[in-house]
Length: 296
Image 1 (cartoon, rainbow, N blue to C red):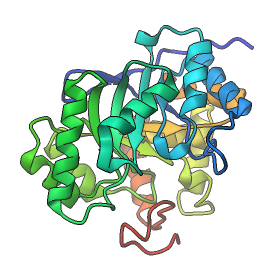
Image 2: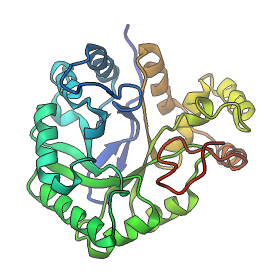
Image 3: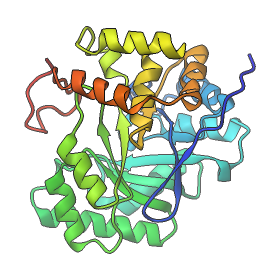
């Protein structure tokens, strides 16, 4: 099936590199709970479908156990390496970041990733732990193993501690973000320090957290723009310069998500989604570590 879409726009980062503003995630839906060495062909096929449709921002992680599948899909996907934006993250091997990244690169069959993230800050017992880890991130960037470095699931206090000794600031913080989890204070901190926001679980308001106060309004906007409520959710991120990471095994749905490049929400519509979203709180990931209550 052939599709034609407006190219995905790019977001300029604080290190002068650029990130495609819609990413394809290899976690959530593809997360491997069993033996990592057992290759999952469905995951490979799903990623290759995304690449074939025009997704170039491919978000992976050590934790997902799907780096080997991502590497095979990249190799077989037919798109030149320099046109892809490949992301990975360190989690369990955060005490040995250099070897963790080298292990990821081996699975990915790549010489470098475009972006490498510290997946979570919750392992750190002190600010010094965060600072030491970040110094190692700067070293692997200097060694050419990754073009850019960033973090994920950091709160303002984690970012502040990291920035205190950083010589290279994080380019981004990847966080859960949707109308029911707007992270207002955190996004203000990002803006103040020129740190980009990338969003996982951006469709939560129309999936896990539905029904809710935004449902009817999103449905109305979907009708107006002749798209789905999910596409409205993605565009709500993009119109705030937040880069959404999403996934699906369905080719048609992935194609539909690319329609987010063809329209723009008005400031009134953006504000109304935010206003309705504030009427409900829902955090789907890391609630205990964030000191948050269970999803409403």
